Image (tube, rainbow, N blue to C red; front, side, top):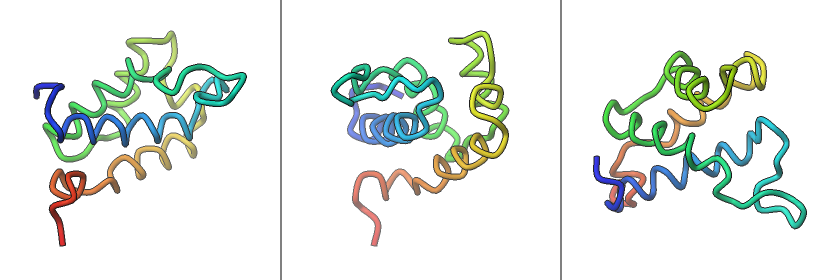
Length: 104
């Protein structure tokens, strides 16, 4: 998926917002004394691409992506319950049409 498409941009924005809300390392993206809003962009991009390609994502895949960038999985960083809630939020984002505003 090309990263300059509207679908990819909207999906990545949604994933990034969810990662910022989760904030696994307490970086406070966007806060006055925090890191930039796109601090978790390297991690959100492959998650967004997977969601577009497959429609859903599971914890195993997110942990694999997270481990690529860090020396631990997301589950290890935030705990199993928070990781499960994050996956549920990712998958509740809706269909690609919903992300584009084309759903009823």
